[in-house]
Length: 422
Image (cartoon, rainbow, N blue to C red):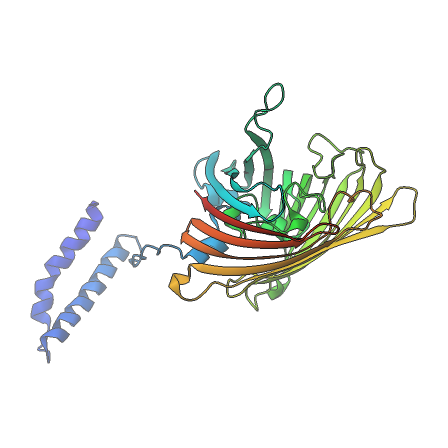
């Protein structure tokens, strides 16, 4: 025990007999004891002030374990991407924190010849590090099972390793942050709210329009980005503006090795999170690029998207729309393809709020004349399921899909997925 604290306790104990003698007769012993306690507290406060520590502060109770819904709404790594460097580490630079995600899937399909059974999901590692008070780093690494493992010469490895995100960010303040690296393109809500790691999202799968490895929108973006808040009272406006390499010659890939046609892509994203009603978010974005697919004609690309989200879990509501417009170079004819989805979920109030049923309808329409997106099949489908939170960091999901594509039979798929974060 420090000497000052020991001195304070001794002074209080020595003062007790004098306090008892000075105390006039009270109506009851309980009131006498309460009066003594009050005077002891005043003396303790005075001793603390004389020590130069100021008034003693009450000890805050330890926080309770987070409820499953709180852990899901504010996951460990969901905040890390925008966490100021001084919050990651206040004393030691550089510092590094590591978090991970993994999942296992069981599926069964009505499509003849389709594979069923268990498959290993993605194994994800998130790295967050502080380089100084205003500079931090974010990295995301994924390992995905390969269907061709062991084939070829040399034999294909069992897993593909991919750098999903690698971002270095300078944070001047809440109004201006500049970064460079490989991003999940801030072109719609889902792509930046739910990264790799299936535990982060309510459902087993992402919407088809924003599927990893898909071609409808550019999921990844390599370049520079500025972002921040715009003073707007209770509207809480936020912005993202970026320039970088657009789609690669394989349009499902980003320009990791360089811009395929020396024509930079750019984007602007604006969204609001008003104070009232709390939990609402809405916004939109535009994306501009020149696409030069391998074996195809180059075209100008415009993408417009919009979203509206209710971020609470009672209910959860997410709706997005995107229009992709391609105009071949030298032509005045444009081709438009659209995609949208609506997802809703509700965390049930009983059984310790561990059950969360959900439903999503999604739709994709691809213009038949669009040679860029010709390989992307149109879709109309429903997804229904329930999420059960085994703990604050692990979930079990049961999902049923019903999908219909042009010229193909309707397909039903059942899935079971345990997912977790560590």
